[in-house]
Structures are given as C-alpha cells and as structure tokens.
Length: 154
Image 1 (cartoon, rainbow, N blue to C red):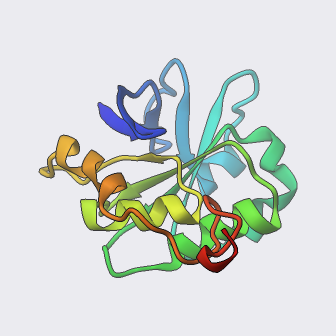
Image 2: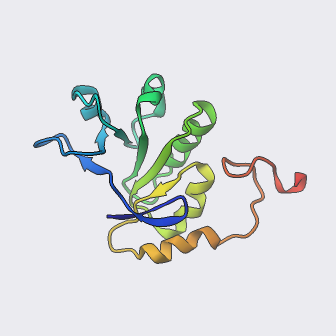
C-alpha cells in the first residue's frame, strides 16, 4: 500500500494485524488490546490508538513503540489532533506518528502541524492530490510542532 511519509509517497512496509490468525512477518501495527495481550518481542511494533484511548495509557512504553497510528474513524472526530500534540509536546515522542482511517486532503496540512509524519489516505481518494495539501498554505501564523515561533516573532 502507498502512503505519504515525510511529504513523499512511498510503498509502506507496515502491516495492520487485527489479532486474528497467524501473526504476519515483518513490521506490524496492532491495537492497544493486541499489544497488551500478545508477545511481540523481537520485532518492530506499531500501535494504533482509537479516539477513546488517550496517549497517557502508553506513556511509560513509548520507547518500545516504533510507530503510533492514530485512527480517525470519521473526519469530524478531532481527538487525534490533540493526541499527536500530546505525544510530541508533553511526552517527547520523536518517532513516526501516522494518521489512519478517514484521512483526506483537507486534513493533512493541519495534521502535519500537530505532529503527524505519515498518512494513510482514505481508500478511494487520490494520494497524489492529497500530497499537494502541504502546499495549500504558504504562511503559518501560530506556533505548532512544525513552527516554534509565531509569525510576529519571525
């Protein structure tokens, strides 16, 4: 599957694993429940958070998690934006944060400002068009994870 990562389109090597069936080879993204109940030692693990699962639930284990995927089940559920900011600003998480689920072009610029670094664009949407979202705005007024000074201080 193709994703956007660090503002380029790449072929993704992570596999989503629901916990059913045999654990696939390679890098896996699992739910919080699977992560807590399955022995995943010796492999790269990504963790998917749902909107009701606050990042504080995994704060003590962030060093073991290579990727955090934050699910947006609907485009109008904004908790994932806050979770990315909490992971970056409060918890100091520096690895990949990925937006998954109902991810569309209109959201990507703002997701980046909150700390997301990769995006699984919603099925049926044009990933090449979504990539253009990073060019939608030329000036950033506010402080965010991608801009440390407000416009009036630059």
